[in-house]
Image 1: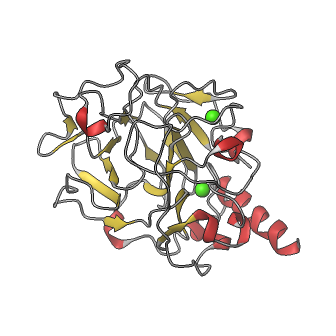
Image 2: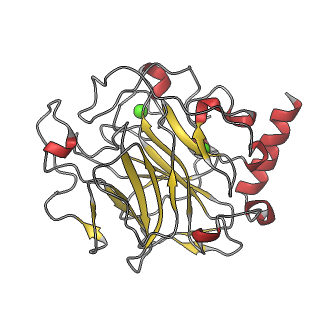
Length: 294
Ligand SMILES: [Ca+2]
Ligand SMILES: [Ca+2]
């Protein structure tokens, strides 16, 4: 209990931007002066345990999220930074694939998203400056009713969200049942406002390769629940295999706890069982119960 309290206290201090030196401990050299992706939830656990965005309903698409941090010692303005999934990334163009219209409601089916023209998942940040160590969460938002301070592509949140560890929370407000991260194989790419790839986290064997000029391409294990960075300079591990503040939970949107960093993560383990509730390839399995957002 004492350790847990200490970790929370340290992470709270970090989130408040009062201890940037912790955040600066060891950022990946290739990450440069950019935000750093710290967590990705693609395989949303089944049942209530999958309600990552804490709106009271688990949605295999809407509860997906990407978490980022400012790992530098200087403020970063997020305006123009863009997240892409593999289907949305149009190599060489640094913009969404025009063949894949975004956020268009499509018919419900079990077709893999690669078989549809509505698969593109992308989000461009609005004008918002984040402090060193400050954490940002971007939820997919499909069929979601997020409450509290939540921004979108047009406007920043009015302030930190106490529902998510005082992170700054966004919703992509995705309206397409196909615009989702594939559970087994996909990637999330962060592109800077000038159109240059900054960071890519891939898992499985996506049909499309990350851009070769991306300076930081990392491999995430395939998990039920999220893949979480264990520290600023640490590797990505299955969240539920971690200890410290992360222990026993499937994900932690808004919580990045370097004090729980570098905890030994068990080897990644492939998940079993086909997905039945998400029109993408994948296989969310049962996850351990947790309090959403906490
Ligand atoms: Ca939800
Ligand atoms: Ca987290």
